[in-house]
Length: 458
Image (cartoon, rainbow, N blue to C red; front, side, top):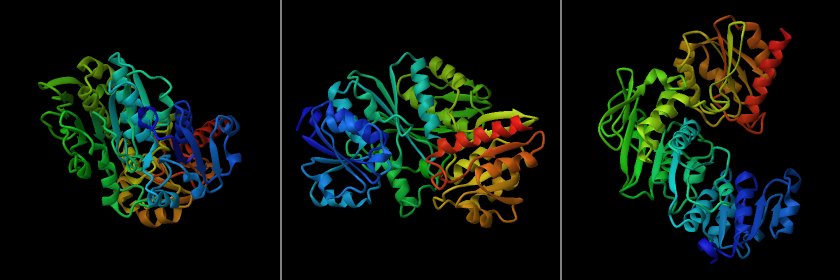
């Protein structure tokens, strides 16, 4: 073993952002690295420099040779535990770990446990909540690293060896590959059906989310949503449970009462701020605000820092982001709404029969019939795109007029024709983007670009 308990050689499967960042961090610590990816080398930049530094690459569907001499096989977040090489590694007795797990071990070993860790998971709201916690902690004067599934791999922060508050968004895929990862504050925003194309059933998906709590100790905190059926029943192990709710009082937690956000986290009951002053609108964002408040206070932030953080947070791109208001019509990009529950919560924030809703993409075995009630209330028209269009149309038949647009270009063009002053054109697809786009960010950027083009043309 090298420093920080690292083996002399590590194999990494997946050379996207996380795999590349971890490879660089391991090389700088004297670890020999082999990297495999199903894509060809032409899909990546900068491989020659890393090859010169000693990385052994296995592109185009790596075989068992990737594992030769490896003490660990480390998975990038998008690589499933069902990948053939995972079984081969286990057959050889090689531990299979997530990039998150390895980066956490390095960070903890090199500053002797002086970091503070806040980790956030959930089906919806985790990116907003994670960013909101980081924003509050920065307002409290703390040095913060915002990392994980939110876009910057944890490994990217390993070049600086100093104590920090690490605030990490953690996906169920990453949690499948942890062993010791222990956040002092762990947050579960909610659990609703998602990724059922990867998990056998909802129970298996929920169990993956619950792993965020499994290494916590008695003096750690588990922040959970009392309003969410699955989250409120989650197995949180030894940690102290702190609930949040927008519907009812939660002694020892955070809630909304008579239009006021109230907290008992870590002490006496006290008002924090009126709920009307929370920076982001909508019921789902009120839940995110309560989760962020509870997590930040559990991590030691003052009431003053929390209140200012809740008032001044600007939100995230592609999450109910106003692209344009033109001719009394609002165009809103919620491309990050990649599952049914996210789309339903986005619709909550709009008046009855005011929404022209763009739905579709790659189906993740979503429960589209559960959209009938929110769509019937809020939507005037549904425009479908992508592979999931036939499934969505069947599920929503009779609830609202539906037109198949097929592509984003046609959807935006048709929405422009149909929209009236006072309407909202909402892209909240309830599906993954991978049938037509690289990711939800590209989908959202394309939508926004088309919206601006059509506005200029009229």
